[in-house]
Structures are given as C-alpha cells and as structure tokens.
Length: 231
Figure 1: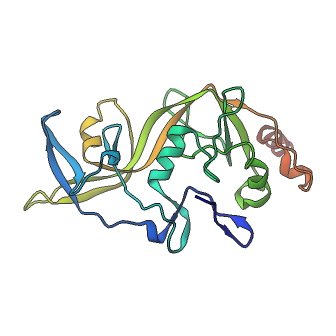
Figure 2: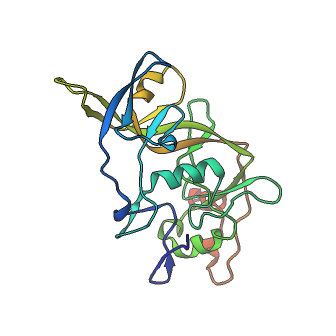
Figure 3: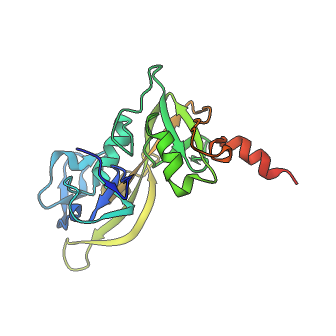
C-alpha cells in the first residue's frame, strides 16, 4: 500500500488510523491443550494468536484520521517479525545480512543487559529523511545494526472473568510481560498491543551524512554525548 503524506511529510506505515480501530467482543474459551481458560475473540481468526497471546486486531485500510502516537498492532507485529521498515514497510535487511535500526535514545535493556525494543527498524533509505524531518531526532539519535532479533515480551492489557459470568473484564492496563519465565497464565489472559524483541549483536553504525543538514544533525549519539559531558 502506498505510503501517505501530510504537508509533504510521510506518515509512517506503523501509524494507526482512526478508521482501523475495531470494537470486537472478547470471550474466555476453554483450551484443552493447557487445561485452562484463554482469552479470545468471539469470532477468532488464525492470525489473532502469536506467542500464546491474543493480539489486538486492527483494520488495514488507513481510513479516517491518523494518530501519530498510536500504532497499528498487526502492522507492528509484521514489521518486528519480518524486519520491515516502520516508515515504508521496505526490508531493513542489508546486503551483509544485518538489520538497520534508528533510535532516538539508547534502546531499553533486559535484566541480563541485552538491548530490547518495541520500535520497528528503519531501512537505510528512510534514515536520511527521518533525520531531516522528525523533530524527536533533531537533538539525539543513534543508528545501529543488529545480526538478528528474538521475541522477548508483550505490552498487553490483562482480563479476568467477571464476578457474575465469564465476560472478560480488564483489570490491568498495558503491562509488560516477558515470554516464558513462568508467565504462561498471564499470557493466556492478555490482549497484546505491542510486541518487544531482543536485539542480537547490536553495533553502532556511522552517522548518515545529509548534505542539506547542519553538522549538529548528523553527529552520532556517542559523539554528542561526549560533547554534552564537557564543561
């Protein structure tokens, strides 16, 4: 699908549009595989489930108004799983097999120190434009590449059966739940909104040189941090 623009600026493919929201009834279903209940849609589809989690279902027609800070969950899942660009959905896998990524700041870290993120990658072709047009990247940015990714966690709302019947009632909002680690029961009652991945062998990359940009715009994060630490 063609990337849309507003005032000459591209609207990232990851962005959610108001017409893509779906009010779908939830239900608890018995899962004989685990001998326990599991959150589901009343009319589930095969791709609603991944990593043992029920995921938010959004449309894909980009109808209505765009919401800059909201993400389309199905598109985000595909971008993180298949390493597609958050801006134009192009492949972020370079010729050398490494995956390009662009951050405003350092990515988050897991308890073992491994970098993790819920932000999809940015392809090399879109990085220069992003640096020139995104206000959040004017002061700080970090360009990296990774060898691979692994599913790590989900940001999800949690549900439980109501007091009177089995109607799902939300009891926790946007909780981060790592996969495994004894969290299977929580994952079964979760409605996933945002996936997280572990970044394998993350390396800093040279800053992209933009002819029309100022020198301060193209300095890599480590150089700017060194400058900021000086008296």
